[in-house]
Image (cartoon, rainbow, N blue to C red; front, side):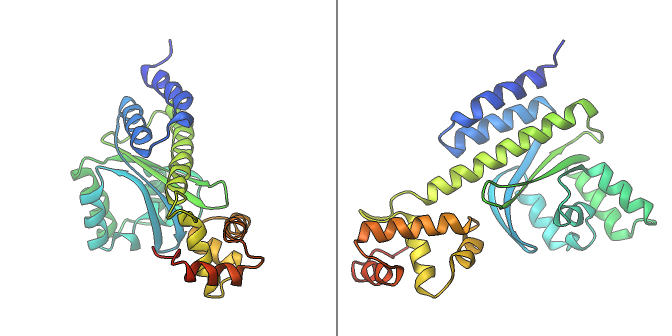
Amino acid sequence: MQDFSHTEAWAFIRAAPNYRSAVELEAHFARVLEAFGFDRYACARLDGPNSLLPLASKGLETWTEHWEEQGYIKVDPCARWTLAGRPSFAWAEARAWSERRGPLSPRELGLWDDAASDGMRGGMVVTTPGPSGQVLITRIMTGARDIRPADRPILDGLSVIFSTLMLRLYEQAHDRPLNSVLTHREAECLRWAGDGLTDMDIGERLGISFRTVNNHIENAKRKLGVRNRVGAYKRALDLDLLSA
C-alpha cells in the first residue's frame, strides 16, 4: 500500500505546474513536506560563492541568523558540499564524511548540537541547474535523524520541481510591466547595456541566459522604434522609462 506521504507527493507533482502564485506553490510544498516529517525549508538561487538570492523560506530565519553569527560556514560540511556542486545529499552523509577525515572540531560539534537543539536533527540539500544555467539550492530539515531510503528520490524530485517553479514565478514577477512600454526585465537589461555590459555580463548579474538578455533588449528596441541598443537606451532615458 502506498504511503500517505507518497500520495501527497504525487498530488503536488500534478498540481505544482499549474500554480500562478508563489504563495500557492509554497503552501502546497509545505504541506507535502510535513507529510514526510519535514517542517522547514529554504530555496535560493546561487549567484556566487558568497551570494544567494532567496526564493522561498519557512522556519529558518532565526537559525540562519545564528548560523551566520557563529561563522559556521567555515566548518559546515553541508555548505562545503553544496558549493562543490553535490547534486543531492543528506546531512548524515556530510557529517559522516567529515568524521572520516578525523575527530570533529569543537566548532563543528557546536554546529550539530545547535541544530539539534533547534529541532533540526536531519536534513537534505538538493542542488539542481536552473532552466537557463542557474544553480538552484533547496534545503529541507526534519526533527528526525534518519531519512527513509524510499523517501530520498521522491524528496529529490519534489525539491527540483519546487525550486524550478519558484524561479519561474520569480522571473515572471520581475518581468511584469514597469510602465506603459517596458517590462522590469527589459528596463534592467537596457540599464546594464547602457553601462557597456555585454549580454553575457548582464545575464550573469541577473541570473538569466545571454540569449534571454538579447531577447529582452530586442523587445525593447522594437517597442521604442529604434534599430540599435544605444538608441534604445537613449530613447528610454528621454522618455524616463528606466526608473526602478
